[in-house]
Image (cartoon, rainbow, N blue to C red):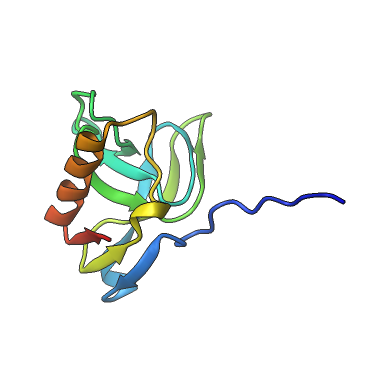
Length: 121
């Protein structure tokens, strides 16, 4: 028998949000193939978004948003929807981090998301 594996769904990380027209925006993903729930940072120079990277120095070291659905920017910039402000609550177990961040880096990302009104539970 064939085993099927279901991946993350768009918005599957969301527990609660006040008003979707307020908390979500269409953004531009600069690079990468990203899954729903990917924690994003904002590139200071361009204003575009990319996967949060605690070791970066381009603005993506600070978590500021969560990607709503899958985005494939491997061939260049693409538009995408992201949860960019709260009030909102997200499930910590459904968030996606690039690389292998330490617990301290994940905790710092959660705190940075709280700064924009996105509570991680």
